[in-house]
Image: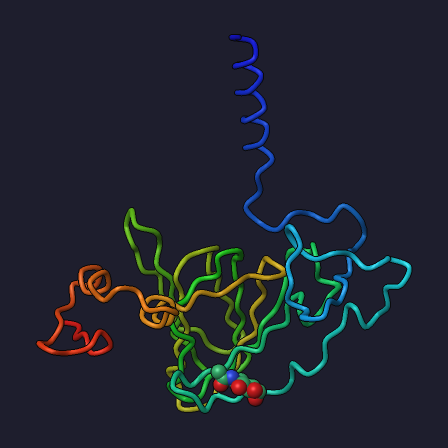
Length: 221
Ligand SMILES: *[C@@H]1O[C@H](CO)[C@@H](O)[C@H](O)[C@H]1NC(C)=O
């Protein structure tokens, strides 16, 4: 009985030691994702591999990152993603890329990547960037970055970039996942589908509701 218990404990410890904080390492040279009809389906943890003999250079290629995204939107920014959905050869490799364009005073609003650390380099312009640590301190780290400057946003932490210059800004960022995921805080909390019960949001954000207002008119104080 005791022996079975000890074996169970040992197996659990082994399972924990095998757990990894980033995407799993490849078990072969590559595992080009097989195109499926929707190209966004996820199988177990990643995508099914194409027969390696059928792999071709284009499976590892994406063109067009020289083209700016359209920043004519409310945030004044645009993220062009180059992940496993654009480059099937990224499957299992634990890495991807984005180009971020910012209009003057545009921002990439506070968001997190649940599966990736991000390393960002500014190609043009001046960005005020920052991230906040988890709840033990909620400490804010910020920096003003100019062309050629690099900054890191640790995995899972809420971060942002704001273009403080009068010109367009451009950044390229590497992410330590083939599919980093993104949770934009305001959209997830205030724009969920269906909406979160306004009583929950009112208490969470210590806001008050105006008499007769609808949930979308909750006033922050
Ligand atoms: C980002 O830019 C692309 C290409 O111009 C455009 O199709 C897309 O709608 C833009 N996204 C947003 C959120 O503005």
